[in-house]
Length: 312
Image 1 (cartoon, rainbow, N blue to C red):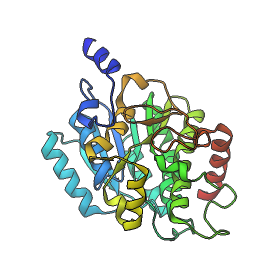
Image 2 (image 1 turned 120 degrees about the horizontal axis):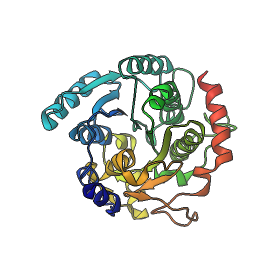
Image 3 (image 1 turned 45 degrees about the horizontal axis):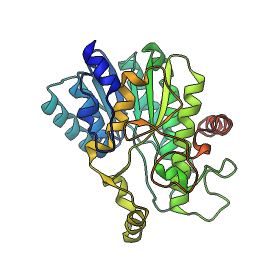
Image 4 (image 1 turned 120 degrees about the vertical axis):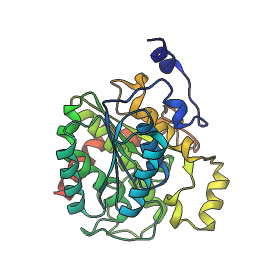
């Protein structure tokens, strides 16, 4: 009991790491699913959860990279209950197949971390014609998560973490033209809209299903493969904004905290950053907090209805 109390009252910061936020946490008997786990934040999130005894399913589209991570995590943690599942979020048939396999193998899922995503990439479209950032970051995860609702409810109280970003401040999601069919494409506006959609999805999910809490997480700025589409001017812009670059262990810490902290038991529909609950801020504040539209209930409900129509 003393250990749990220490965990609940500990204050974390942007410098806190995954291992630090998991101090005193025991995840034996818990099952976690992590998307985008073939490297970067997803792989570190999976490793951290496995290190505390959780059964962990790593999900991504590259089998070779996934297998390397599974082998590395087993070796580092001594946890044999680590496996992989292939899924391409840009292909809804692939999403359905992966969700079906995971659901059959793991009847109860305690933690789902929707970590995978694209960032500021050139205009591309998924197999269904969705703009790739909206299609992969939001719609793929929307379908994947909703297909796993029975498994999450079977583990109640279960937690879903949606990786958003401070980049949501760049743009609200355009519910009339989410796939950029009637506007000139802008990669950063599209990224901001997709990250707003991630936060709104967490709000919408949290409002709908008993036994499941869902929160949006801003991990911070981390130089992973997510940044592969960025050019010199993009990095200069981020430097000008004063954004601090985190290590992977620091970047994954808030996702892990969101997934495990006793402090967040029963709390959902929130925006989390740097190991704490974020605050609503004005548009002039660029370095922390969230803008009101990112957690707006009406917008979340409208996006939910639209997403159901698009993935159907």
